[in-house]
Image 1 (spheres, one colour):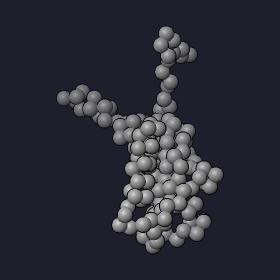
Image 2 (cartoon, rainbow, N blue to C red):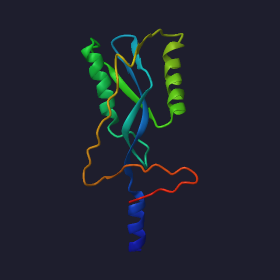
Image 3 (cartoon, helix red, strand yellow):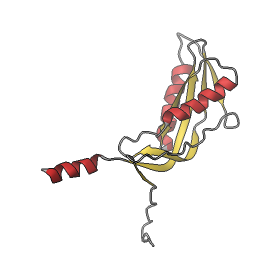
Length: 150
């Protein structure tokens, strides 16, 4: 019984890994009808949890966008960061959210786009505490090649 519990504890632990990810930001305000979209951006070294597939420190990516918009005159932006490790998945999410605000016939929104020159997400470094397991992914060998470890 103890061995079973011990195995289940190890199976339940998740690791945080650094990987390439795709992000875009969306911001709106309850005070006006302007909404903002960033471009889909490729960010190296984003940290994700292997069990939940959740972006580590997602709120801090949203804070980056919020601070940029506040610095440029938007009073009370509510910002969201959307993430995926797959380019096609993030493009679908981007199109669906954009469609919601550009094709709404009942209410008109003013949609503004932040280009990469205007705003860039910066990777958030992982702060490891003792309770979390961290790994850096090992690239898989191509067919016919073997991984050489020293």
